[in-house]
Amino acid sequence: MTDSPLVLTFDCGTQSMRALIFDRDGNIVAKSQYKYPQAYHSPEPGWTEQSMDVYWESLIKTSKEIAEKYPEEMKKIICVTITPFRDSYTCVDKEGNFLRDVIVWLDQREAKCCEPLPLSSRIAFSLVGMTEALNVQRKITKSNWIKENQPEIWAKTYKYISVGCALNYLLTGQMKESVASNIGHVPFDYKNKKWKSTNDIQFSMFGIETEKLCELVDPLGTIGYVTEEASKLTGIPKGLPLIATGSDKGCETLGSGVTDNESASLSFGTSSTIQFSTSKYVEPIPLLPAYPAVIPNLYNPEVQIYRGYWMVTWFLKEFAQKEVVMAKEMGCAAEDLLNKYLEQVPAGCNGLMVQPYWAPQLKQPEGRGAIIGFNSSHTRVHIYRAIIEGIGFALYDAMLNLEKRSGNKIKYVSAAGGGSQSDTICQITADMFGLPVRRIQTYEATGLGSSIAGFVGMGVYKDFDEAMSKMVHYQPLILPDEKNHAVYQKLYSDVYKGTYNRLRPLYLKLYDILKIKR
Image (cartoon, rainbow, N blue to C red; front, side, top):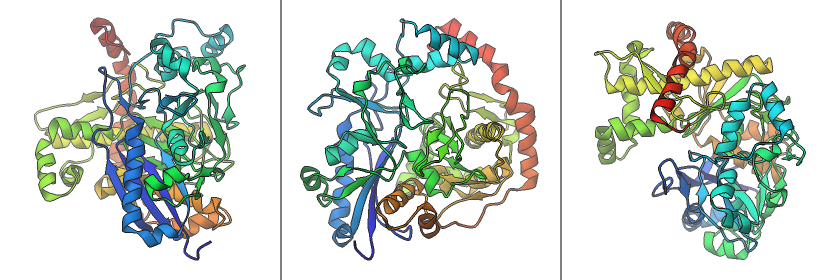
């Protein structure tokens, strides 16, 4: 093994592919990013699909760019890791051909699911008050939709696999997936970290035959080795091991240094989440599993705000074309320009508040987004800050719920993802949570976490504690403003907390009057 070993990590996101080389001190030695021409295509309104070729060709493109620019560094790579986004699946036949495009996690289509679940399952769901929520989950499970609407494809399907598993296969020829990446609408036993038994009350929800499920590998295990064909396409040396790590959120939590039950990881990404790490299996919401962590014997309970910081993309498209044009001329991100305006608006946005349910939540399947409190003093900058605060309120509410269910008390939060690059957004978060916010040396926390697992898996470090002490470095803490925190506490307890229950009857009327699908 080289004296200065490196790990090549691919961070496969919803909107772009990153190839990153990390050294054993947690420094980024090389980076290549390719933004997909479009994050997805929509054959029908509400559908979101993407060709698997887009992800694979993006991996090839970023890998080749690094190989050409950093040939000496490529010689020092000891392993490869892939950390993918979650809950996005496709079908492959016995020859490894993709039978259809990937259905991306943002997809809103629903199966009809006319055939009832077994009586035992219906009774169990009813006893915990989750019948409606689980019916919704069953309908949005894409394997059920494929079986109903594309039976000829399902009949040819040898394996129903995630984007991560598909990339593993294309790189190594092995159709295997990490236990810590296997997160989605599939019959996985998250507590015991294996596929569910056919006798499990939830197994029938997903409509997937056991033989169509891929082989699972524990984190730090070897998925396979880079094939000669993949090596020629990517520039990665043939025979390098592909080490199993975890999903994007799980690796982000690890890379953010959140490995105990006193801290929480906030992800300000396309989907915004809050996670913490615990040795106990704690469901954040009844029947919503805690996910296997990259670190063996730990779990990551999580609450997700679907389309979280996607709302910023929505805002840019609908209200901030001026900044989009200016940013292109200046060679910076439009979000950077908008974030400079945030300090012009006080905490609470002069009474403007956003409930950020731009997509249904598990416990609020009929939920819709809401903006309340408008008056003539408000500008689009108020709307922008209200969106940031609305996501923050939802994550804060989730943290309180996680604390209640786990018995843990969070003492500080770590911020990662695109939004964490803004000092102002992190300050708003600190003020809202009333807790210190910390950031690591890079906003590439997902790639760092995956690389940490690579170094541990290859024996460069004896365990995760040693690896993290060498590779995770913290910036100065961002401390809360107690005056602003008091404002946010009052807004949360007296306004935000009751917003959903008050609006729910109106949401239901909207569905009924306009015949809108839930």
